[in-house]
Image (cartoon, rainbow, N blue to C red; front, side):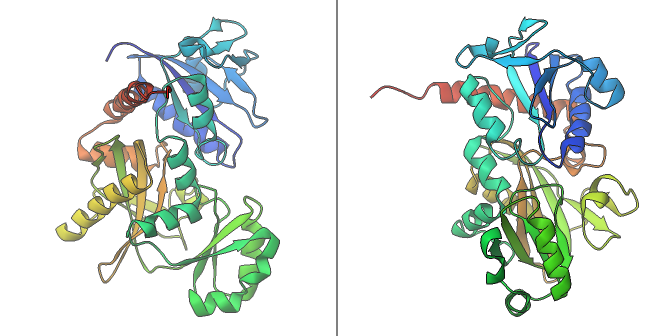
Length: 355
C-alpha cells in the first residue's frame, strides 16, 4: 500500500474523551512512519484542530494549537483544510472516537458527506451498535442469542418499577444508558434504592435506559476485521476482581481485572463464539472493525452482550491484544483497516445516482 495521508480524528464530545486520546496515541504509533499522519483533535466544545503528530505521541494529550480546521463538502481529498496549511488533501480518515458523537454514526455521516474514505463501520451499523436497544432487537431478529432486558424512558421511568425488574429479570440486574460505552453510566443493582440511584446515573447520559438480567458467566470478547468476508480473532477473556467491568476496571485500576488471551475455552465453545461473532457482525451491517462481547455461562450457553464499533486501542484494550495473539500485530491491523476503508469507498462510489 503506497504512502497515504491519514487524518487521525480523536478526542470528541463524549464522556470517553480521555480514552480516545490514549487510543489515538497507540494508533499513531501503529501507523508509524509508513504514512503521513495529521492528528485532528475535536475538543470538548466540538471545535476541530489540526495538530502535530509529535505532540500527540510525546504528550499523550491534544497538542496546543490554534490551527483551526474548516471543511468544504464535495471537494474530494481537499475537503479538510487548516488555517495555517490550507487543504490537507487527506486520503483517508481514521476515527478513534469512543462514545457519543463519534461511535454512533455522527462522524461517519459527516465524513461520508465530505466524500472521504473512513475506517470502520458505516452510518447505520455505527448507530445501531451504539444504541444497545436497537442492537438487541436486530440480534434477536437474526436469531442470535443475547441477554434478556427491559427498556425505560426518561419521560416514563415509573413504568418499570423495581418489583417488575425483580420479577422479570431477577437480581442482580444492570442498568445502562442505551447510548454509551466504556461502561460509563452503568450500575449493578440488587435493591430498590440502588435501582433508583442507577436510573438517575444512567439518565445523565441518555434518555433511553436498558435494564439487563445479570448473567453469571465468563466475559469473552472477539475482535473482528473485514468487510464482506470478515475474520474473527482468537477469543479473549476479561477476568475481574471488581464487582463488574466498569470504567475504572477497564482503564484506571490495573488490579481490578486482567486479560487472558487466548481465552481458555473448550474447542467447541471457542468455535461457537467465533461463529456467532461473525453472524452478529453481519447482522448489524458492520464493516472494517468491531469487537463483539459475549457471556459464556457455566452450562456452555453463549450470549452476545454488545458490539463495539470503535473498540479501545489503549495498552489495556483487548482489540489489539487479541489480534496480536492471532498473529496480526498492531501495525498490520491498522494498515488493513486503512485498506478496507479505501476498498469500501471505491466499491460504494460505483453506485449509480442516475434513474
